[in-house]
Length: 85
Image (cartoon, rainbow, N blue to C red; front, top):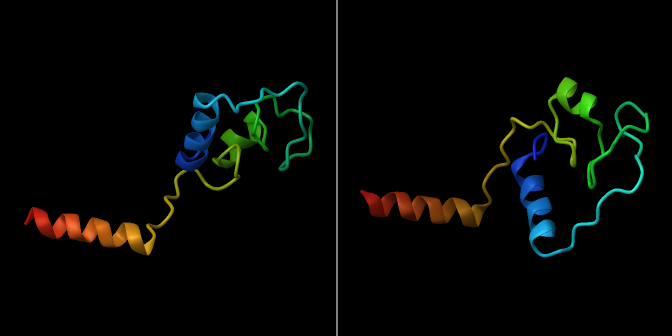
């Protein structure tokens, strides 16, 4: 599954694993260019917009950006780091 951020990829993999995935029956409209060229289920942007803008096909966020850790995850990471030293 290319053209997705890590979060959206995990969501779609979960849907496939637990048989909640529903395939797309007819092309949808792209939210960026407005053409009816979205051919993959759960995607909101077409392949050409995904590659041209370097965005996630589902949530339209930049693919290279990493979401920040929550306070709980940051605390667990700090504890694990301190234990190793």
